[in-house]
Length: 218
Image (cartoon, rainbow, N blue to C red; front, side, top):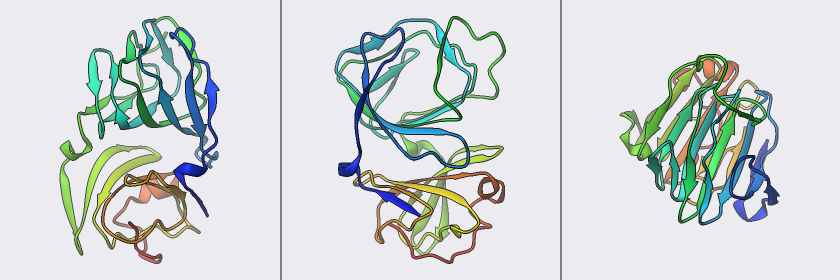
């Protein structure tokens, strides 16, 4: 069980091939799904105008600032899912931004068009509140952001959300108030919003099948 406060993260400069410069990256612990997860800071004026692709799917949530990808602007609260092998041609951040990102493997940039078709559909939300809201009772609501084999992501609003049993599930939370990241640990109690990501067997069961055995979360 792991909980990391945003202030305790260790940042390092990370090169971005084909870009105007590096970004600052705080990598999070590796989990059983083999994914790459990190907080990423893009400096003001950063840009990459180069054709390329990643062999892994990418999921991201913009926490501050603005990121423009393929001509679409993603401001604070914006969510994106980009399928593996999706060709990209333009990405920039004029004001700079902070992003929470997940990749389904090492994010290795490959130059040129992807040699195979993208695996699945993309999703882009100007804000996570655009996702349909489902009341769960007790003042808690769920918004499903992504549903796929072995990977499901929700935005949870309110208090008293039952958490998966850490002995049985790979579950991670991102508190959108202070950006605390938790893996198989109960975040703080109280209202607010948090990103919930389930992987592996937990994703196959989904939220409704999880046992409510842990403390409620913030």
